[in-house]
Length: 269
Image 1: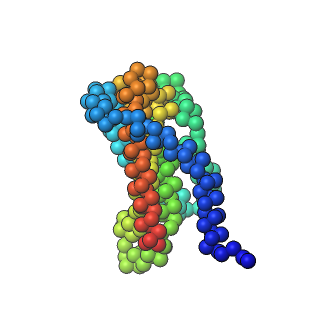
Image 2: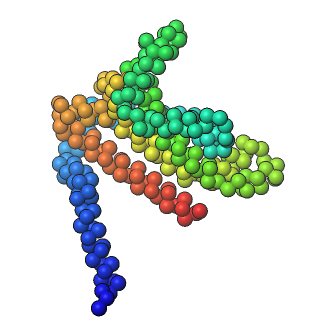
Image 3: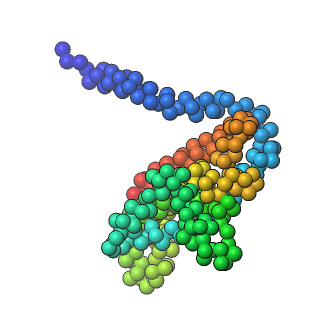
């Protein structure tokens, strides 16, 4: 007698859950261990610590600036890749993806070789009295380098998904290209733009490798939250745990927000 389909599906589901359990536990247990390890009372106490407060404030300030620069400078790049075909476009597209897969230490060295005193632009910057390495400007540039591709790729996909008929209809009504972009293209790709911006901000917030090489780890000046975790792990584990928990919660919220944007975009489409 043939096995009922419902019973067969139930057995297959149980086997699938059992096969998935090791990986799910491996991914979930470290996050759970971090949450359990930090006492709520110690969080408030550690937040009052000067080093923790400075790291949070510096991270908030630098990531806000890097995100603004990403949106202002990255949006034209995304629009160019989404709407134009030109020689070398595939190479340019690959170069934009490169910082995403590049080891952070390599990114830091590359930035130092470009903007450092002995870098490609070192003499030019020096003649202008500008020194970038080991300053907050270096923190911002490191964040910008590693996080901006996430926004550019999301914005590119958003611009490419816009139905051109809406833009053509606005053009027929006499709207300029800038007005079409502002009132038609951007609103129709807003969820992709917002999702990319949130992901870029989160990536900038968690940046470590490029920052520590290019900007150093100076409390109150270049020590962001990930760098404070690194020092705190050696000096005061409770501080490191508090900052790590904050970043964990922020990362979870960011992913939830981005997934919400994507779901709303799919519903609209």
